[in-house]
Image (cartoon, rainbow, N blue to C red; front, side, top):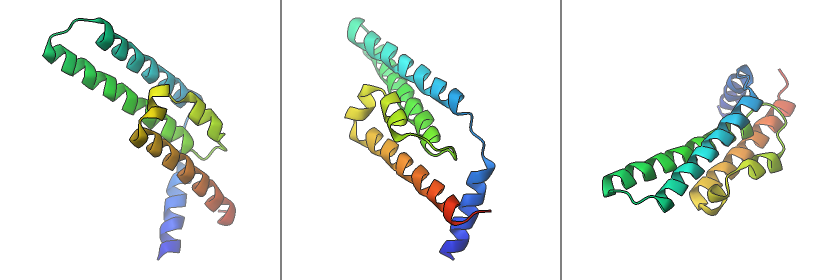
Length: 121
């Protein structure tokens, strides 16, 4: 059963053709937005409601940044692990859950690429 699941997962993965340059640009743009929101949180005197909304926008931008990098790490292309980690915003690497998610995506992508070598189609 696990062999069938792996083959179906592998087949679905092979059908996706991500645009890596676009994903890296998305990751960069979301990191810039997160930095912009963080700067606004530090500089501006805000009402509590505005501060909460800005903090939520900051968190959302960081999550979108991590998701874009995870999609790069999970792609079929041979991806340099250092490329993904170097592209990560410094705040991501200091937050354990986000950093762990990125490391898991990298490991999963490497595993998927190894599976394709073991199960050529």
